[in-house]
View 1 (cartoon, rainbow, N blue to C red):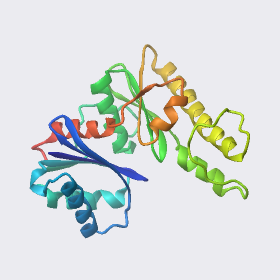
View 2: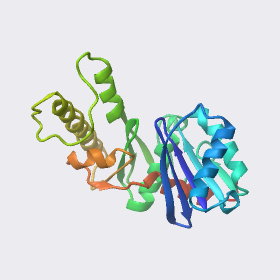
View 3: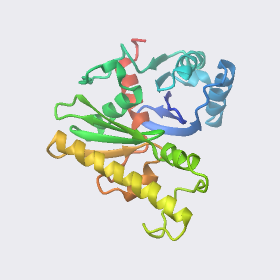
Length: 257
């Protein structure tokens, strides 16, 4: 079994793979303050839920945008497997040319999404990942990574609105009856959901025009199913795109770690 872990600022997505088949998956709160011992207990508990032990894990693939978690997670992963532990970053084979000004600047999760989308959908393609930030990543006609766009995520932007006003309050991200809200709650829901969908459509269309031709567009991330139904520029949701990309990169690097 391969354990794939994508450590984000808000959530950590993890999955267990038996070959190419995803057999279990979890989305948990990222907690950088956890000690190494707590992380090990956490990971072993998840494996026990699937009636597995550490020796059943043949390797671990990690992408992380939280430096405080990266080293600790990798070290603890080494305690639960005798196989390779791959952390996506400098020196790791991805099979993809990173065609931006400073390749070291691009987040590991963004590279992983680009690798997975190229393999699953073919170039050119655009991935929009709904997380703490809403990231757009572009694979060009030649299959290289061209860069992308980073926008405030749905939750963080709505939280900024609420914290900056005295009379507004948090709401559930459910679809309002209409764009014209008949009360404060519906007005916030309209602005949050339709506003973020408009952001996605606007950026997506600009990027697609720059790429040119017929561009595949795919969404992933925890909030994709919340926002994409209100978008006109993207309809395909691939919930496990990042985890699949980690599996692909681990296969490229197994035996090299």
